[in-house]
Image 1 (cartoon, helix red, strand yellow):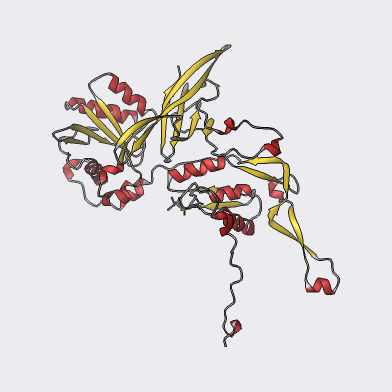
Image 2 (cartoon, protein in one colour):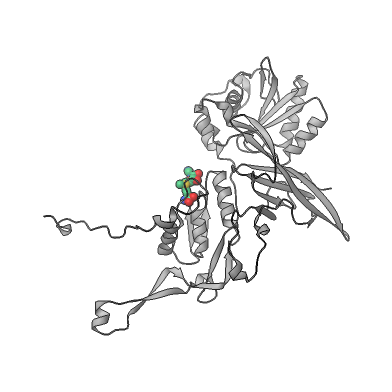
Length: 423
Ligand SMILES: C[S@@+](CC[C@H](N)C(=O)[O-])C[C@H]1O[C@@H](n2cnc3c(N)ncnc32)[C@H](O)[C@@H]1O
């Protein structure tokens, strides 16, 4: 017979057999979502209220959600925009129990349920049993509820540069007069976009000309570490027209928010057709191996909005209505416009005074999917309509930049932004 203490080993006595219950029946909003029970327990075991929790793989934001629930501060990040959008919506639509605090501050700690630790010693000596706090069971203030505290979402849209470093190997010919990296980068993107693109003959911001029996298009590629600007589109169009080409495709990783207006203005003048094409962020990591490289590109789809103004005494008030969203079908390679109320909009955000650079969420609209149970805490009924997607904004005054931006997230997690000057 062999016993445990024959060896320098010890039995595993802390297997969590209960974390599956509940976790597996929680509704999933992300394919690889972690159960909250496990994460809550880890946070409660290892941190105190007010501490900072970091999860570098946010996914649907379970760690941030659990940290928020337990009064911890949090930071999280993810390489996927879909994950960030899912997590943002999850946090914004969550309600949490309000826990009793010791001194009115979360950092002063919660008041927890306690139990008596009765030991043989306490019984034998008739000692007062030790009081033990259950740090995963804070006492709940039934008259109040909490929503998520304020948080910022920041994006770093330039990670494509890092991917690229592994692929640029060829030196540029001396005659090109351009750095090797740039030359190869543009060439590779053009070849992925149109295998038969003829690089020769390109001039200025037209980087390649693709000519087949069906089409003759000028291709302009946006910078690897920045956004396609209105200026690039304008210049590419001028360069294309100078070569007698009437269709320009501008490919980019990211676009300045006003490019939709620039495209319409150019097309309104007649003659030229402009296509704005989004390059998939993981193109350089995955794309060069892809058997269908055309799947790496999709037309930049802009939301359809309507702006109404009304007078309020001296002030001018504006309301924005989201009318539609453009959805790209990767299989059929077509973009379809869907009405905003047809279930394809997951959330939309309004910057009432867009500075042209940093999008600030002034108004946010999304579907809660399930109305939170806040009747007891508020001691009032809330109209269930309040928790469904609203398509018209609250009125707001025209401010300094006289410009708004609307960002729409569709049900697939794709974001698109449209910018409008206010009248
Ligand atoms: C298993 S999921 C996390 C699930 C999360 N705990 C939840 O409950 O939803 C892993 C996440 O890590 C992200 N990811 C993968 N590689 C990454 C990286 N290098 N940096 C940041 N995030 C990454 C993926 O996009 C994915 O959303």
